[in-house]
Structures are given as C-alpha cells and as structure tokens.
Amino acid sequence: MVRINLISGPRNLSTAFMYSFAQRPNTRVLDEPYYAVYLIKSGAQHPARNEVLASIPQTEAEVDAMVFEETPHDTLFIKNMAHHVEILSKEIKPGLIPVFLIRNPRHVIASYSRVMANPVMRDIGIEYQYRLFERIRNIEGTAPAVVDSGILLHNPPKVLMALCNRLGISFYEEMLTWPAGPKPYDGVWAPYWYGTVHQSQGFGKPSEENPDIPPHLEALCTEAMEYYQNLLPFAINPTEHVTEIRPAK
Image (cartoon, rainbow, N blue to C red; front, side, top):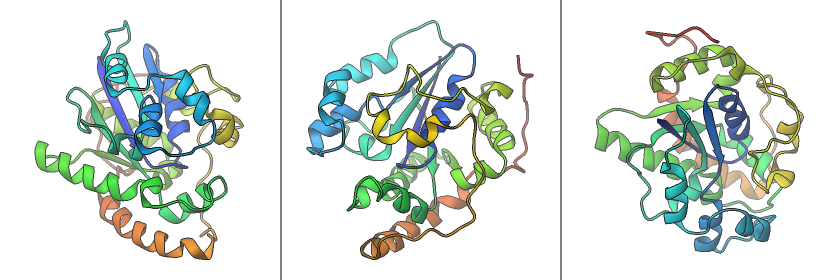
C-alpha cells in the first residue's frame, strides 16, 4: 500500500485535496486523524473540541495503528495539519510518503482570522513545515514533494499528474471533480471549517488579489512569508516532466 502523508497548513485547499484523492479507485482517505492527539497535548480550545475528542482516537499509538493497518486499498491518503504533526513523539514515520501543501501566508491568515481572531505561527504551520521539510531532505538526501495551492489552482490536471508521477501512482481524471456537500469521511469539525469546500465540485479558480488582513497580524504574515519563500522553489509546477502517466479508468 502507498501511504501518502499530506502535511498542510490550515485554510489551504487541504480538504479539496483530500476530496480529490478520495475520487481515485481503491483509495482510502483519513481526515486529520491526529487532531484529538493535538488537542489533548496542546490544550488548544478549538471549535467542536469535545466532539473531536469523542469521535477519533486520543493517543498517538491508537492513530498509528489505524494508519498502518492493512486494508484492501492500494492507496491511503492522510490529510494532516502541520501543527498536529509537530506535537507527535515521532514526527517522521517510516512508511509514510510526505507531501507538503503550502499557500501564500497572507491568504492563509486572511482566511484563518475569520474563524480564529488571533492565530500564532504554530496555527499557520509554515515555519514547522519548512523545518520538517529540511529535516526530511537531510535524512533522505532528496527533497519531499511540495505543492503550492496557488500553482495548483492555475493548472490542477498538470500539477496532480506530476505529483502522482512522483508518488508512483496513477492519475485519474476523476480526481478533478467531486460531488458537492458533506462527505462521509469528513471529520466532525467539518461544519465549522468546510462550508466553502462543501459548495465546491472541483478546484476553484486562483485568486489574484492580495487580501487584507487585520493590522495586528501583519508581523506574523511577514515572518511566515520568509518560510514560504524558502519552500516555494521546491513546488511542483505544471511544466514538470512526467515520465509515466497510466491512463485513467
């Protein structure tokens, strides 16, 4: 089984990315399986905290057992938030292929601040993404895959083709669309965070605007932008050479 470990910042197309992979045949998806572990270890007071704690395993060992259990599926796609991974006792888990999903921090902060008024760097996730990316690159000698949401939205088929090629799995045209509305694999926190993506039926159009953010978050944005700019050169682009794409079924 190919186990894909998406490590994303918040408000970053990660749910749409999960929906995309869920359209592949013989693919299982897990929505933020370490969320309860994060809430317990961090003490963070997020919307639907009690529902989250009641709905999914609360220990890292229990979640690991779920992630690594053998199922009939060819592919497992795990959607993780960077700050959930950061608090784990074992952040780099052998057998999981890391994929980093990044987004311009100004867009992240503009969206995130509509739900939580005072995010900090850990909430944004980009600093940790950069530091974990560098650790993996140093250990393995090669750079993990990076997907920038802005680049993805400009050409979803080409970026997804290139990513699937790197992962050694097939690209399917079905990955470009999905039915609107809640999904059975959504976490119980979906009503608080997934309103917009539940209205979607595919990847939307890229936003060219530079959104306003609250003045008190400008310093956070400036700091986060430095880490983003360090990761951006590694992002898959639509012109990347693809060595093999097997036909969609």
